[in-house]
Image (cartoon, rainbow, N blue to C red; front, side):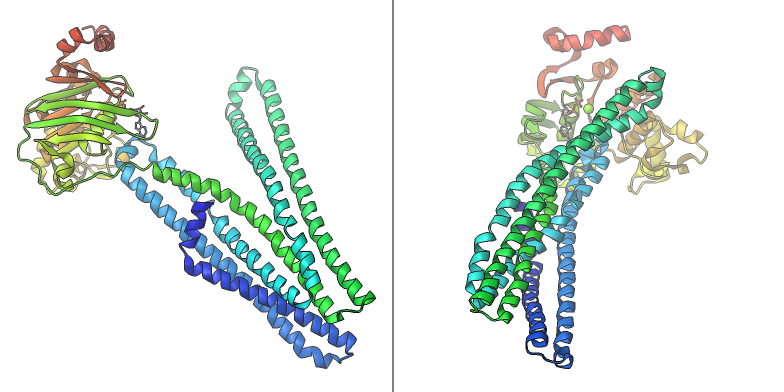
Length: 573
Ligand code: ADP
Ligand code: MG
């Protein structure tokens, strides 16, 4: 609740308006009681005529109107506070996703995550629209009423003061119990609906395998379980509200008893005072009870805010940039003690030390999940290492200017993204290139003949995300982008699957072409690419276990040998 509270205090203006509204409402409550008592007193005890009290009735009407408009304003401001907080969180979340898109989006996780998190934001609503306004009401209104009662007849005040604490205490006890129960219920609900959905989706299969009777029993059992937990919670909820009512009724009764004795037996107070107090006391308890329900409504927000805050914390470390221009010629790229960890206890790249000299072609190899793509992301300047440095000609990567860096680096991921537009637009990608240059690049990437076969050639429209193109075609368009840009470093995450042999060979050839012009670092799965590289980095579980040529690693590194002997056999080499 702390975070939520802090955010509420950040909106001081609204907070103060709500407090003033609470004060106004308490005064209106007192005034309302006063007017009712005056009218009754005037009509029945002073024997006034209706004409004499009609103006009081009018004032009473105005008071009632004011009271309801005050509660309208309260709701409105609560809603506004909620809207502000939600907007803020949505913005923060989107910002954080914007920064992570580079690495996360091509892993295809962002879409689902964004929508889930943005929905969690909605759960913050009740805390601000219900709990906060009600809490202010429930602290201010009872205090004002109590002061008024004390000023009229302090015995009643004492009775209230003694009984009132039972309400919050009782609420807390029940709250703690129902909280746990209702969490259990939520769990059993999601279990139930999950199972139900699974079974529905698998209905045909179940029928085919003659298992429908068994699953009928399973569903029946889980639905009965669900009913039982719901009933249990309802039992607690009903008992608790009964107890709360009981406490407040007993307290009101006590006050009434005391007032009655003073009024009738001891004749110590006037009817006016007694009636006035008797009207105020229920309002006192009511506002305490209201806090309970608002508290439960706000409770769900606590879980949501924790979830969101965690998500925000997970945000990738910001990447630092400087102002230095990119060197004209790369003579040396060094990784010195590079470390990177996604999140605590998560995967980690450990102490990577390696160098790439001028003209070298590096292949990164390793099992799936060994950290190849992660290392490539670090090299690309998409991830900020936690420790260590990435040096280009002895200068830290973080000293370079961001634009200069990305102008000289091309990164071809496993799933290059194509935008809806023509093929030439997709190759040029905003670069001011002539049709001739674009064709040249496409040719080098080995895709020109394919493009020329298309209905509109280079002006063929392709769909968002490259619909209508195969994986290999997308890769080659991405390669054409790189050829057009003439970067100094090309990073390439070679796709493992989905490419036919012919496409593979075309890609290989283009890569060789590329290697003539710049430094190529590629994640490689195929022996062909690996053998072609001048240096191989062998990664396992985030560690660089070996560096060298294929033959060197094969003779010196048994883990490497194991990884490739199988592939050798498969490819018949
Ligand atoms: P490779 O490319 O060698 O298959 P990756 O570098 O993609 O391996 O991933 C290495 C490890 O890091 C994997 O265990 C993966 O689950 C984890 N990982 C990858 N991306 C993220 C991410 N954005 N957040 C947390 N963990 C990640
Ligand atoms: Mg990978």
